[in-house]
Image (cartoon, rainbow, N blue to C red; front, side, top):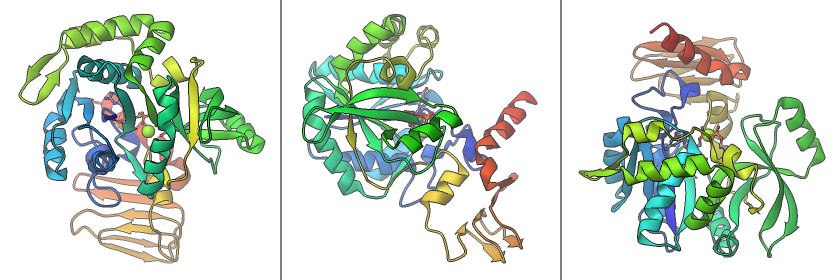
Amino acid sequence: MIPLILSGGSGTRLWPVSRRNLPKQFLALSGDGTLFQQTVQRAEQLPDAAPPIVVASEDHRFLVADQLLDAGVEGAAIILEPLPRNTAPAIALGALKAMASDADAVLLVLPADHLIGDPASFRNAVARARPAAQQGWLVTFGIRPDRPDTGFGYIRRADPIDAHTYRVGRFVEKPDLATAQSYLADGGYEWNSGMFLFKASRYLQELQQHAPAMLAAAREAFASARADLDFIRIDRDAFARVPENSIDYAVMEKTAHAAVVPVDCAWSDIGSWSALWLAGTRDADGNLREGDTVAMNTRNSLLRSHARHLVATVGVEDLIVVTTPDATLVAHRDAAQDVKRVVDELKASG
Ligand code: GDD
Ligand code: MG
């Protein structure tokens, strides 16, 4: 089994800490080490895991190499994308790389920006998913939802395949709020965790069926790759011709071969400051505090200061306050998803 670590996202909702040159997966936001390092180490602890394939932006090549070294992970293949094309092409590159040395390779696709509080349960779920993946199912890991979050894919479970795995009856990527609410009320839906286990060959067959132009262009881009130090560099012009899409829209919503293994492993996608607040260890007033902070009569807030910059709050609740050397964010916790609009605005104004 080969872990395929997706590390190309930009994490704009965690501005101002997450930046273009240092996106969230390369930051120590919670727990020991960065989210990327926690992911590769979690993968390494799986029985029979080969060294990982990492697919990342070429801008982050030295971050990836340094953080792998620092985490003590050896032998990784690092594929560099000259521009982002979302997850379906990134996984295609990883699948082509895996199949170059093993036509039967099984891939464990892992986003580099998730927290897993209970790694033993995660390992257990991967073992449970293995037989179905080997038989040609695209297995997702289903998380029991506790809120109608519109940032996730929703999976409706159908008939069992084996003792631990079910067919997916329906896969709906990022529904609107009313739909997400109806799924929660229905009770029969799980979140797609964004982690997948499948044979590399099966994934490529699915692309052939549901996104043939993407597969053809990804094959050409992979054929154009050249080795450079420890990196596999993809040609910019060839990769620019690959249509952009996520695995969820391009494959998972369409395939007849999706399966789900339920997993309860204290999982969270650290997509926004409110997600970090939810996942973190909060004090008796419900505050998550990092660095030098004074919180007086302050509740259910996230306060994060850098270096020796003191952050003090008085008489507030449900706030996010994050300082860095050159920027300060103050937001309502309910507006955490909109932080990316600040980044859009900054980009637009150059
Ligand atoms: N290499 C590479 N290239 N990686 C990418 C790219 C890319 O162009 N775009 C995103 N990634 C990485 C991100 O860094 C992240 O680790 C992972 O792929 C998933 O991308 P996100 O952009 O974070 O996806 P999402 O959170 O909106 O949605 C996905 O994850 C949810 C769970 O967290 C979907 O799979 C949802 O269905 C799922 O519920
Ligand atoms: Mg995500």
